[in-house]
Length: 234
Ligand SMILES: *Cc1c(COP(=O)(O)O)cnc(C)c1O
Image (tube, rainbow, N blue to C red):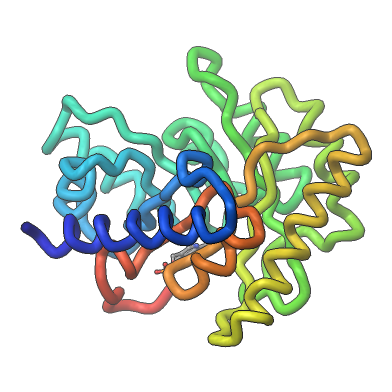
């Protein structure tokens, strides 16, 4: 057994146990393996143990890796999710190579992604990154601007608005973790009250996945718990 397959088993068991503790169906929680800084071989290894969704933060690294995985294992069909900061001059490659983008936080980026999404591909699945209080990264739309952005994205033809994403400040305090995730869940409920129904809450990383599941996460973004410690900083 490889380390990655051991880790995947542990993470899946934790996901299942935690879902049950929260009265949730584990089948409604997708595990996204965040492979940033790890090579194509690690992705192929995880895929050989049933993992099919992968998240990447750095565009050039991701494009190279996607091509390399394709070369190593052409039989694999994987779902690639872009979860990192987006520069507006990089939207075309994102629109061409990914099936999801979790880090949309302004209308300009959204409209470029829609324009540049190749017509032969399905609409690009979008999560809006929200800057909930204490968000670790500086990115994310402010909650007060979320409804306007969501309305604009819904109107774009080659995008499909799926949900909300957040990266709360890392904390060992479960109450603080849950408070941040609860805010994101409430924002999703408030959009629903305004006629925008979303099916995805992209929240929870290696250090806070239990809290995220308890607060309704439908997509965990797990890196180090699957692939090990990263050797260069994010
Ligand atoms: C790196 C990263 C993750 C994964 O973090 P881990 O703590 O390694 O699980 C999840 N989401 C985003 C946006 C990231 O940048």
